Amino acid sequence: MAHPTTSLQPILWSADVTKLDVKKDRWYIIHQVLIYGTLTEIKWLFQTYGIKQVTHVFVHEPARLYSKKVFHFIKNYLLPLRDTNLYEEDYITSLYGPIRQRTQGRI
Image 1 (cartoon, rainbow, N blue to C red):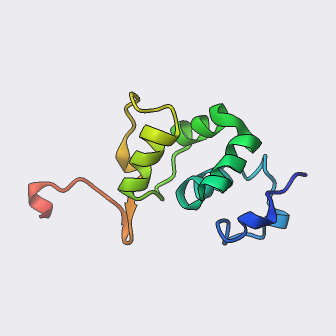
Image 2: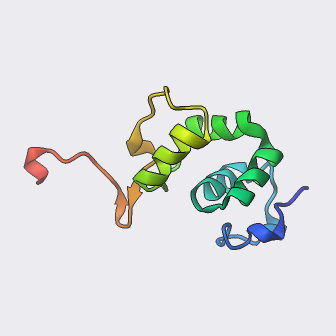
């Protein structure tokens, strides 16, 4: 079982990195590093998983953990998804939970 580098412990704060498996826990690791990682940590992510697998997890296994700015940065600049339509509501959250489209009756 391969573990993430211990330098990722501050980003993967909800788990002990020595108990994480890079294959079994890839969803958690990929999303956490994309959201909170520095360029050095994102480089580790791409070296560990490859751009295709990171992109696959981002697109096909979304997490409602991203701020709007981080989501757009990752989609449009970090991953090759600039021309791909993704549902923001599958990714973007606020401090109080997922952001939902407001209708006139909910304003």
